[in-house]
Amino acid sequence: MSESPAKVFARLSTVDRPDVASPRLRRAVVLGGSVAGLLAARVLADHADEVVVLERDEGVHGIDGERRGVPQSLQVHALLPGGRAQIERWFPGFGREAVEQGAVASAAHQSEQWIDDVRAVSAPNVVLLNGSRTFIEALLRRRTLALPNVRLLPTAATGLTFHDARVSGVRLSAADEESVVPAEFVVDAMGRSSRLAAWLERDGWEPPPLQRMQIDVNYSTAYFARSQNEPPVAVATSRVSPDYPKKTHAALTAVENGRWMLLQMTYGEDRPPQDWDGFVARCADLPPVFADVAHNQPIGEVHAFRLAEARRRRYDRLNRLPGGLVSVGDAVASFNPIYGQGMSSAALHASCLSEYLCGASDATGVATRFFELQKVVVDAAWDLSTQSDAQRLETGRPPLPTRLQRALVDQVLAAAVVDIPVATAFNEVAFMNAHPSTLAAPSVVLRSVASNVRTRARAARGRLTSEAGTPG
Picture 1 (cartoon, rainbow, N blue to C red):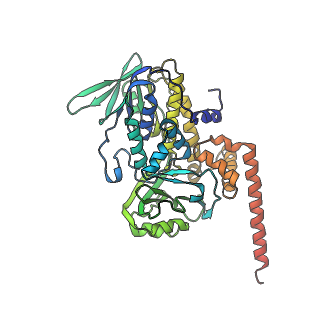
Picture 2 (tube, rainbow, N blue to C red):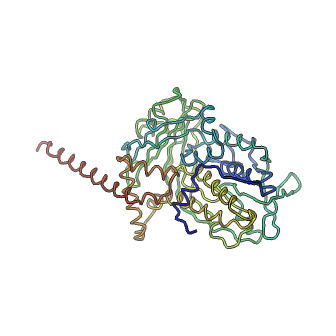
């Protein structure tokens, strides 16, 4: 790919709808009906006469709509602005409909960000749509299945069939017999536990290399009653540096049905409390907004979740892959959830699929171009989310290029606490509106360094003043 990653990312982030002359596929099948699968189905609806979504968990829901295939669904999720823009691209009016049904649209003045117990400046681009994962997914499902050429089968796939080195169908396991759904194009959206790699190896194809990153992240999320429809603070985050004495990260958001969702996150053996008394007590050690929310009426129980590692399946490195087959969402890469990139990455994968299908002379050929586009999106999210985890877990001295890159990022992160233009630029990357390389722009780096010099100078003057006023 000759274009720079930043240029590709910017193009994939467009909100313009593509011109599709007429469908070139007879039937496409999507394996999985979560966010990534639903958005892939929406894109495929423009290119196929029929789109079939296979979702084994349809109609199998627990408390608050929890599905067994999405064990993290009851934790706090973020629909980042980049992801929301892509969803609006495919489903115009999605945000308005979400708010009408109870989601909370928050402006910059309704947001608080804390870093090491210091409140960061409020950047103007912190404009969010707040809702639970199950709420957002349910609305996406209704919009997707309302399309005339999309239907859902409540079943699971057991494998693929091939003809002339291309996908020809999807194997289904019925009660006592196996059947095949013919397909010209298949999308793997089976999530983190996707079985596609095993199927490929079983059938004589090359499985993708699996890249792992240890994270050992622990979550506890609690729900509280909310009395205000438009609270003064609708969303807040609290992050702590690896060497900061406190170890608990936190996030809260106002969601549908008059509720708060409040999350506590830790690493390693330090687990957030799973009982109400312990959970509320730990909120007292967080910035004030978290303790304030924890004083409200609790709802249900505290929900725990643990993730040992981030994973990335490198389909972009395969030399031999059947035609008419792609993989999206967590099936390709699942990140440390604290950065909230999952749903928004899935939305950008749909953008990759759209560009690929619009440009491919033969959509049923090997999807090399799709995986090249997707790599730009995955690289951006993976590098941003794993960088701090790698630093936290390192025991040796990293190579010079890594140290230089971290020094640059550290300058930007420090300045983003006190400098609104730098905070805005950083948010554009964190919100998946811009590629991380944009933070290396001279204007951002120089402003960050200058801001940090001024901050250190003010701190030094403050110490001198304090020392001068101390009795001898």
